[in-house]
Amino acid sequence: MSAPSLLLGACTALPTSPPSTFVAAPACATASARISFDFESASQSRCVIEGERDFTILVSPEHAPPINPSPWYAFRYSIEPGGDVAIGLEYLEGRHRYVPKREAAGASDPLTVTQSDVGNRATFSLAPGTGRISAQEIFDSARYDRTISKLQRLPFFQLVELGHSLEGRPIEGLRMGRKDAPNLIVLLGRAHPPEVSGAVAMEAFMNELAAIYEEGGLDPHILQVLAVPQLNPDGVARGNWRANLGGVDLNRDWGVFSQPETSSVAKWLNELEPTISPMAMIDFHSTRKNLFYVQGADETDLNQERFLQQWLGSQLNRVEGYPFTIERRNANPGSGTAKNWFYAQYGIPSYTYEVADETDREAVSSAARILARGLPAAIRGSLLSAGRGK
Ligand SMILES: [Zn+2]
Image (tube, rainbow, N blue to C red; front, side, top):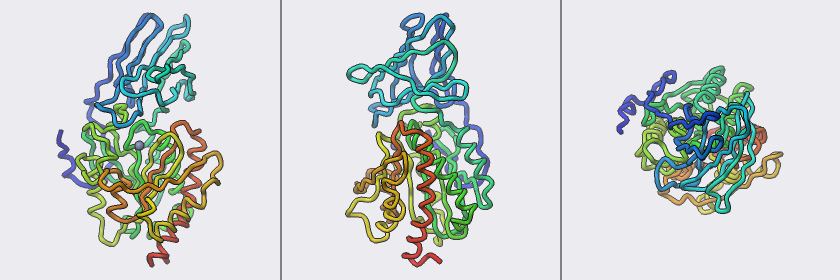
């Protein structure tokens, strides 16, 4: 599929409705229970009726072979009175990873599962009633829109349409600070749709940066932030494990730019006035533990080290309820991650902000707020040493 909308380039516009080419996976139902997949972020799963109150959900990746076992599932249920319903999650390429969350009446609760020895099947039961089950809490475009409407209060906020996804959804850039501010920090999120804990961190991080701007702790004339919180909106809407609609892992496409999602960000960067310099990039993801991937020991220099120590080093073991590690990892040039590309392109601190899948969300948010609070000092240190501060 081509992406002619890319030719339109960056412009400012309100989000447009995506085309409704999306087709939900078929529901399955007995007289006493119904399982359906008819909402944004529902998975493309097959549902098998094993008995009147017994269902199997076949959880499979959007393309083969799967790059990473991050099996996403999300469905709605409606169960008549008369006893619990047994649900089996059967993983066709991968193993059970995410604790199922049950969302009902506005609350989200984790469910207890029994796993098979090899981890390719997890079972749990549901009581009568209605609700939604998902691998992580649903974090969809409506929630991103709420963040945007909150940030609109900032005097220099701008919603930038960087381009469009393969399915025509806008790739939105949220800019804080003046568009001619000479220093730029880039924040990226949701290349990988199931990585919701990283999205929770990014949301809190963006909101806190906005508050810091409002309080005068960041000068909009000196620093601008471009946040792209939803790099893979098609993958999020379709409940993908990892890829965009083109079947490509977007965090292997930097420098390659075969996909409109990544190339729209690169195009925006390429068109920046020469007076504007990127000074850091942070890419939000999820994995099994809280950590930051930073530049390898052979890639760092005095400025990089200063930024690292001032921002993250000073917070190590000090963020309550959120232990994390700093992992120095060589750029592995050509691997196509955002971290590698931003480092190779600009020589700036380029970090992957990894949040553990099941870290308590309050802890994720409060850690992100603390880390955002630590950013201005690290920025000032960098600018002073580069002779760009005041
Ligand atoms: Zn990821």
